[in-house]
Length: 284
Image (tube, rainbow, N blue to C red; front, side, top):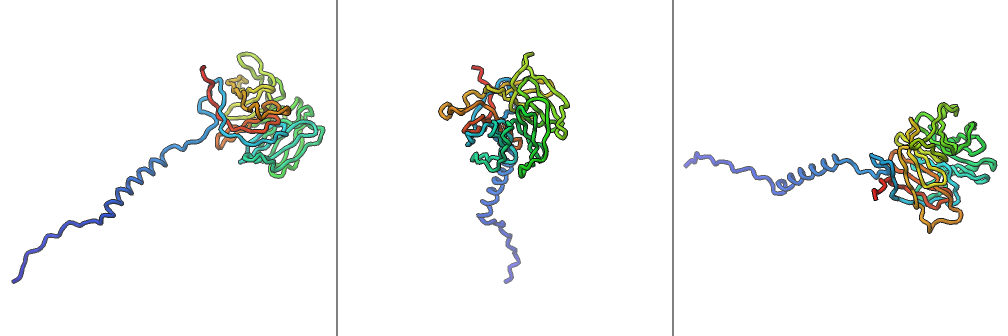
């Protein structure tokens, strides 16, 4: 007997592992997209909005040569470059940030007192105090490329992507052509109509000039177009009393890492260099 009836096919069953794996894969993909889409948190030294009065929080501390009479400080591609002063002790140094080890050094003749330092293109430019002579070095081997002269004392030095900016211990800043070292402009620095004297170590940061006021724990933020001080940074007590010695001198050394937005501070014959974060002064 022939059975002409046909059997209806049953449902196509998927393996159990596939039923579990596919939802997990979808969930994992959603989580990954959200993680990648989330803005990366960057440890920043400078908040987006700076208030007129700022103080600091220490993020990291690093060893610093306590014999270094720091006059100029620059951060560049993972290293610190430092100009140290005093007659008979002045030098140019390349320093390992993490250890404080001096990796490279050239000493100046005893008749020069080294001052401010800046990097321009692939060169290091270093001032001297009363000698009115500057030195240009090759960034790699520290060989001297040339010398130049200027008419004022040399204190701090920085670069605004167009001009060198020089301080001489007064209330004035001088703007120099980086190729000829001729003064192309100058600016009087004031706060609420009063001249701000003893401008010393300089650093150009986010369109402003940061200047340490010699023999104080203050750094001022300067509008480079008007010369007006737009903010004060109080660094009081950043170097603890218990690591100060009879040789410890004043705050002097500002360096900025623009790629990671890190701000470094030290001083003359300080045993520490600090990475700091700027915070508003409490209303209290």
